[in-house]
Image: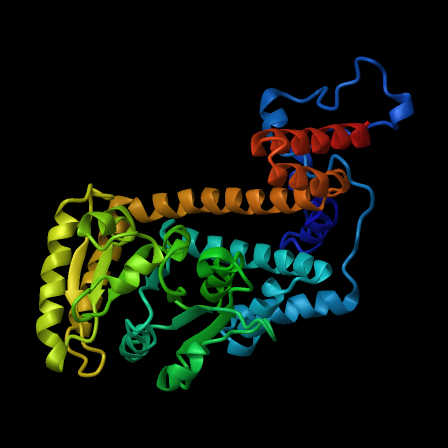
Length: 426
């Protein structure tokens, strides 16, 4: 998104109308003179201290100011007011706005997000600086009963007075681009609960099944007053590592499969089904392991799986001084073990809050996602650059024929990109 177009919108929608100087302008260099009038010793940062130089100069190349049109102003006001009033329709429309690929609507979505972030920050300040919400990531192999589990837990939580938001990240349809599995249709009871909100989000080809807008959807759900946000990911694989960087607690669901209990997992991220391999993969990310379907004929296998994973967890290095990962078994059919499971999740949340781990984790996650988005956007910008697109077919052909090494081809593409960008800036 172009900063020159975004930040004037943010400034226009700022809650404070008495501020005449933009807070962004404190860290901005002076507007550069035309290229033909620059002196040899001209410095864009003259008159600014070191701290100013380190700040991002978001408006240094500001070419024009784009104002919000009256319809856009009314739309954002309507969404924001509806959102903080906990209107589910406004929340759904807001998430649709952040998921769009339309350039102008993406700009409007960022304006809306900044207002919601400011609203949440004020709420947290009134709460002593502590988060008011609990974010939980849920994943596991296909057939683990994730949707059924979420419905049972969600109904229990809404019955206790909580407001629950479920972000079910589904694979995308190759034809329509929409959600393929339709998890919402498998949570019929919870979807009718007025204290719950379920939003299936298509991955749109995103590696790992967690969309780049999932984190923003979490922010919107929290702004709408949902104190518990459950994020369900697609299968097993890269999604665990992605969702672990946006939630407070990561829960791994494992079915008590017969014979090769780890079959679903090893298809995702490991080559063999040894517990030491699991330890290096998903288990390292899990704060809680849940063995599902622990009823009837599967009760005995569930107990065995619980014992195996309990032993495996003892071999791992502790991620936190305030929490040791647990292994529990539940039955979504009978409800057995579900209250005890929530008790352990509450214990984790309380321990993370009191120790400060929760705040520390969220701070680190913001940096991780910022760099993740930077890498994604830089790569796309590199691939779409005219100099790169012009040289790429020839270099790819020479690499496939073995004329040059892939490393040399990469260096040549980077040089073409760098040289072209430098000449353009001058």
